[in-house]
Length: 137
Image (tube, rainbow, N blue to C red; front, top):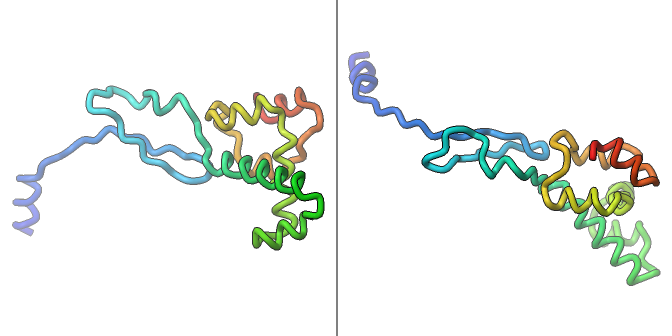
């Protein structure tokens, strides 16, 4: 016990300003610059959801492949990608999003509460104004 008290007496405390933020189901540790006084910095201005961006990229890539090769069906694509047909179908639906919504997601400007699950599980309306309203744009 004496050693413990001695160690605490000579301990050095180091404060590192940081914030733990939830991003697309995961956590990210944001370490602020040396002279930062708060967690509101340029890192907070964008809200990149890398999983969501990756899924939009897959949807675009798969749609492009299917246009290029008319014989490529969803089942053949699923076999090639080693995923289920349901996964391919849900992902391809992301191509129905309004162009400005896709652009906002890629630029990290989507609403903070918009999650990939929302876009994959909910029905995506055909009309772009309805999409903006439902998904908070």
